[in-house]
Length: 119
Length: 135
Image 1 (cartoon, helix red, strand yellow):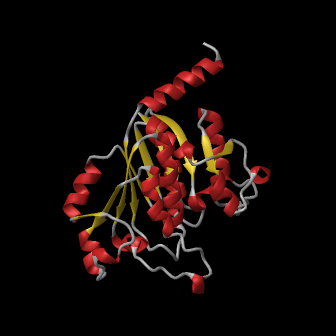
Image 2: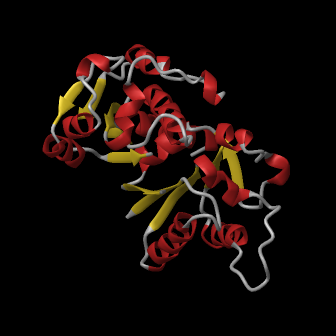
C-alpha cells in the first residue's frame, strides 16, 4: 500500500512526531511505500538542522534524513507554516524540501491512505 | 519517456482522480493555530477539483460563530474567510448538533449556511470519505 503521512506536531514536544517515524519505519519494513511525508503546523520544526538534542536522546531530525536517504522518501515542509516559524532553506536539514500546501492535497489524492499524526 | 512527458502524464492522472476530502475542525478558532492553518489547507484543496467538505464539532463549532472580536487578543479575526468558501466551490459545511447544543449555540448565530447533522450522521459522512484531515 502507498501511504501519505501528515505530521502536525513539533519534535520532542509531542509524541506525534515519534509515532509518525515509527509508523513509517514499520510500514516500510512490511513492504509498503511512503509516497510523501508532509510537515505542517509545528510539525515543520522536525526539519530544522539546528536541532541538537542531548547525546543520550534520539535525534528526531537526523532520523528523518536517514530514512529519506535510505528509502527515497519525499519529505516536504509547508512553506507558509515554515516561514511563520522561522524554518527556511538556510536551516533546512538534508533530505527535506520546502513546498506548498498543494503537496499535501496531492498526497491525499495519490496515496492509498493519508495518515494524520497530530494532537 | 522524457521527464516532461512523465510529469504531464502524472499530472493528468492526478487531475482525473476525484476523492472525497473532509477537513474536520475540532478546536476553538483562537488559542491555538489549528483552526487557521486548517482553513488554509481547505482553501488550497479547492484548486485540485476534489469533492471537499468541512466538518465542525466539539469546540470547532465556535469557529463559525458570528461577531468574533479578536482585538484584545491581538490576533487576526479570520472568520470572514468562512464566508468566502462558497466562492471556492466549497459548499458542504457540516456542523454537529450535539456540539452546538452542549455549548448553547443556535443555528442563527452561525455566520454561514451550514447543514446541521447528528453525531451519528457525522459518523456516516466520515465513513464515506476517502481522505480525512483533522485539525
